[in-house]
Length: 324
Ligand code: UDP
Ligand code: MG
Image (cartoon, rainbow, N blue to C red; front, side):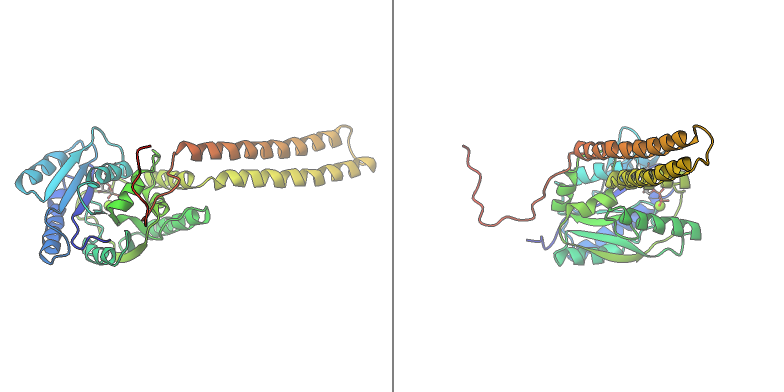
């Protein structure tokens, strides 16, 4: 049963954002006010700021906002742990205090007005609503190209990421509870949320320029994040080595036959055939062996994540558990 008038928590990770917080906090506040007045969300809905170990005045600003207005609250992490961990911290604190969460960046790049449509989709029975960028007009060609290539690569590697969705999304509390069962520490939320399941949909929005301050994601950090995403979702790169090893081994047999043929024709320098045969053979076998070992390492890797084996959506006619 979907809660008709849900309590909403807007979760906003902030890292050294003293320049932009005073600009965007009133915008988030206004959204809460508007949605409450229109009866879309219940009283008690809040903006939850997550200070990700900032070294500037970010936490002072959050504390001040929370003292003045009960629609604001905040948590502060003991040190900087990165955007994804900040989101998990916020979701963990919010999940038992609300019915739905929306995670959004604090720099005003994601259009907060898309939340209206997200809530409509939630009321229509969706547990997860992805905010998807309709346009990337404010991004440079290079940024657009690398970002879109990234989504394609992850999907071709067997990951399941929603095209052009970053971390702007609505989740019901049961979907958040499902997500929190994933115990992995290398977080790549946009790949993990689809694994949680439940009915989902997307809502389009136009990505804006940052309202103030500057990005914490230079190209090098973006690339590291993308690589993390691929390797934490997929063990296909290991499978690739195994396939390459099998191919090289196969080619080595052809190479050995060729070297022996040339040898019997007496057309070679002394020792050449045996050297070439050994080289082909050892190369192929080594690559194949690394691949096979890699397959097991991949399995161990997935096991150590302790991912939930299932997440229930509903039950029917199931009696209460008895103490036996
Ligand atoms: N952020 C964070 N911890 C970090 C880096 C960034 O919580 O270590 C937050 C940041 O305050 C912002 C969001 O993550 O709310 C996105 O960061 P940013 O806008 O710098 O990235 P971009 O939009 O340029 O990719
Ligand atoms: Mg940003």
